Amino acid sequence: MKIAPNKVVVMHYAVSDSEDTLIDSSYDHSPLAVIHGTGYLIPGLEDALLDHVVGDKFEVEVAADQAYGERHDGFVQKVPKAMFAEIEDLDVGTQLRASTDEGEQTVIVVEVSDDEITVDGNHPLAGIDLKFDVEILEVRDATEEEIAHGHVHSEGGCGHNH
Image (cartoon, rainbow, N blue to C red; front, side, top):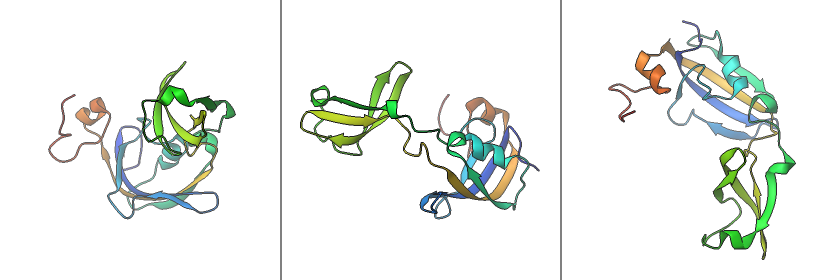
């Protein structure tokens, strides 16, 4: 069975940057199970999976604009430290939720000074070309319930009410 929309895909993957620095891998834990076509995966990887079958092992390079997007300097802002007075341990790397014109979004603290906090709203992998090593372990039809819920269920269902 070929990978297509509404097929459950179970796969191992390793992702690295353009300098072959490993970013993440499923090979040392459980494989990833997704419903193809639901937007769970970055567009470049989802497109590359089409028509592959169980047993396929392949590499795919995904440009930043088909991964987590390009970096935007306007997403980096300095804000008064006083705005975060209620947060005790505000260090570089802390993730915060911020209200923006586009709704709630996660920002990461990238600099802390005496008076200001610099936050970055870019995804940590924005602007980075990625390389995936993929091994397809299983391909099957998604059930109607999985499609309705938008995620893969383990044996016995998903364990929560929708």
